[in-house]
Length: 257
Image (cartoon, rainbow, N blue to C red; front, side, top):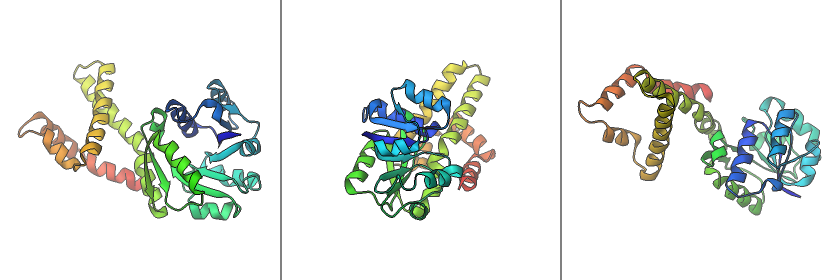
């Protein structure tokens, strides 16, 4: 019996597998999965993960089943394995499917929890949202929380806030990659080699985030601590404000919700 089994082994599932193994929480031989993609199956097999013939086999051989398929195919996938999931523990990462929706799709005996991870789980720096309402047994829930805390930070949210939370932490890495790219391009324009520019930009984003988390200070205070009167930083801040960067980020979250 495998500790966890993935129905779907695409990019997000692959990031979860990589992080869990890298963190040392589970070994590759504790994990199995199935996917319709030959590339995904080969990638999993190369890292020592058991590749099953189909989703039925994954469910039969796993203590915790992780549903990691795209939302547009989720219901057809669940319908196909509905009976297999009776009396099983399920964790879903599918966007838009909360506790109530799963209650309509699954048998009453199926225990389930919806989470929303992001891709930095691959390097054990993820942000993982857990829906407050779930039906896992206490020991199952503690296993999930412990596993997820090994690959990032967790936050429990009520059902109605999962969507906006996901718009921030789930979509946020893409927005921050644009920030990193833009900062680096500005430095390259002024003569800095690109490799050095990416390193400086990425570490600056990482360090700034860690500093806010460590101090708990309002981001505005931390910003003010860097901006000397008449200095280069405040001139750069004005340029960002003139370009509407703050409004652009707010609009990005609005559109993603």
